[in-house]
Length: 553
Image (tube, rainbow, N blue to C red):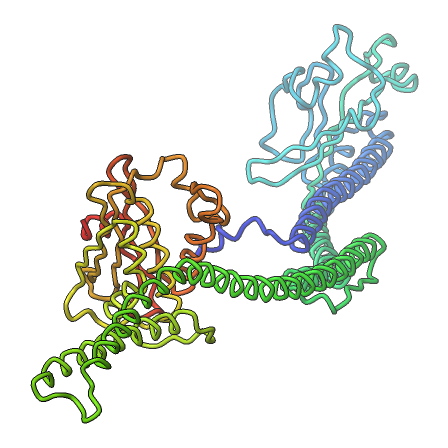
């Protein structure tokens, strides 16, 4: 993992990592600060001890040289100081007179006059009148030598005691309080070495404490915070996946336990609500199935009612249509009875007799064909879909409607496509569709001098759909009624001429066959119904209705 990837992962996003990092950083900062102050306090204590020792050493030097100085035996006093300066830790001993001149130094190169306003003398000579009594910390100073070694210097005033001011060898007046200064310098190498060791020990101890505390923090955070949170997250994931049977229990802490308890209550309520929804859904589905079965039965009854209504309309026409050939057969039979003699048919009238007999056969076949078509339409059979010749079915239906159309003075024009593929459908139901559309067109065109209904069949460009159209030249349908014509019980016919179920039934049949029906009407020009049926009923028509109308026009 490169630095960029590591940087993208910082800062941590998990709460346990944030807690661990926060506590570790805080402990590290506290450890550093406490270690720093501890080292500084220890250093100050050591320096204070060194100051007390230096002050005691200065006092001892003053006492050791007091008699020699009193007797004006300077060489003896200087020799004593030389001997003391050779002890370990003492770097230099000097004596200044009141004017700052170096009267004696264990370092031979120290000569001349010291500036009274230098660091060593400033504390006493900063005021206009020099101080006489100065405390120990003020008389001590710590500085670095040119070779970078720290040194502690202690300044001790040499006071003009009565025994000194009254001696015969001295000419110091009694009013002079301070005769000079004893300057003792001691190296702090031992203190610095001790401080270095102390710093190292403090660093190791602080690092160990931080490391141990970090391990404890990691353990307790993982055990009491991260693990319960992960358990809670796993529970939320289970709920999101609708696995509601697994309870969520956390006992590590009161807060997380309460949170888990609240979430578990939500899980139980969600489970109960889901069970209620499932029960309601099952009940709703059951009711929908029951309603669907009822609607299916009602639809079948509606189809049968429409069929019976159409059959009723055809009854009178068919009866009249049958009456004509039956009457002709009766007349022909009477003529043949007259021709027939006791010894048979006279030879000169055999040809005439055969003519009458041929006409009887023709008229009888006509009656049989009409009755057969009527029986085929009125027969109540179960829905059965098979491959049918749509053009043949149209012609057969027109045979039933022939007399009715003649009475309406409406002419039917057929434009049926040659070699039309067979259509997989319920032939009886499709015949009902054809009857409704043709009769509606005939009623619309009735009363027109040139009333006509044009029936056309064609296939679409892909040759996977049948386009069947019925076009009349009636008065047309107003725009406000176009959206209502397929609604049950909507009709514009007069009382007793219809109940508004024909087109609703047609729409239901076409929809059940996965087809489409569209209507285009223009006032005073006429109306065109276009039915689209797939040759393979598993495919839904895709061609736009406008293209269908344009193709059929």
